[in-house]
Amino acid sequence: MLSNISRWLTYSCALLYAILGALLFLLPEQLAPIFAWKVTAFMTITIGGWCLGNAWLAYINARRWEWKLVYSSLIYLWLFGIGELIVLFVFRDKLKLEHPIAWLYFITLIVNALTAFVGVFDYLRIRPSNKLSGPSLTKIQGLPAIAFVIFVGSLGLYGLTAQIGDIGTNAGIFPEVMSLFTLRSFGVFYFSLALAVVPYFWDRSLNAVLHHSFAAYGLIVFITAAAFMYIGLFDFAERPGGLAYFGVYLVVGIPLFFVFLKYGTGK
Image (cartoon, rainbow, N blue to C red; front, side, top):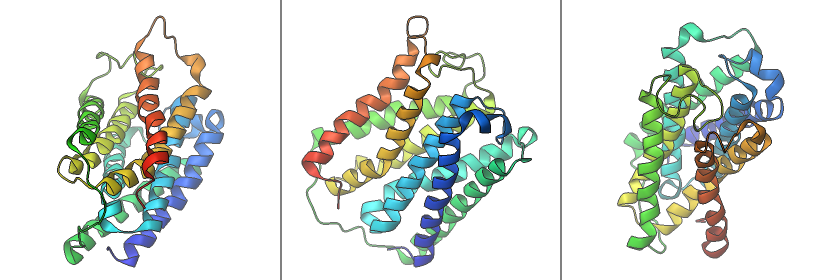
C-alpha cells in the first residue's frame, strides 16, 4: 500500500472537507455572499454536499487503506482536488479571498492536491500490489459502470466546455443560472467521478466496486439532501430537466442501498 504520509494526508483531507462541508451545508444563506466566488445559497449547500461526501470518501479510504480496494476512489479524490484548483487558477480574477470560509476552501483544495501528488509519487515508487481476493463481476454486473461513465462523463465534459446560454445552462437542469466559474467547477466534479470508474471496464473485482460505491455514497446522500432542502427552486412543469437532476442521484442511490444489504460494502 502507499506510505503513511499519503494515508495521513488523506485523513487530513477528510477533516478539512468535513469542517468546510458542515459550514457550507448548514449555513448556506449566510456564507453564499462571502464565499470564494459569486454563488447562490443552493449552489453553496450543493458544494457543501460535495465536501461532506469527499470527507466520508477520504475517511473510509484512509481507514481501509488497501490499494486494490481504495485506488479508484482515491483517483476521484485526487482528480477532484487538482481539477478544482485549476478552476480557481483559471478564474483567479473572480476569486474572492476576503473571508475565512473562502480561504478554508482554497486551503482544503491545496491539501487535496498535495495528497494527490504525494499519492502518485508513492504509487510510482512503491508499485502496490493489485491482488485482491474475492468474487468477480459478471459481464452484466459490469454494464452499470459503462453506463455511469458515459452519462456522468458526458455531463462533466459538457460542464467543462459549454458556454453560458448553451442548452441546460439557463436553469434547464440545475434550477439556477450558473456563472462560467460555477459551471466549470461542476464539470470537474462530474468528470472526476466518471474517470475514476473507468478502471472497472477491465478490473472485475466485486469487492473493489462495492467499496468504491460505498465510499462515494456520501456524495449521493448529501447532494440529494441539499436538492430536497431547496426543492422549491425546481419548476418541473416548466423546466422538466430538473427531474434529471434528482433522477440521477435517486436512480443510483436507491438500488445501491439494497446492493449493500445483499453483498456488503467490499470489506
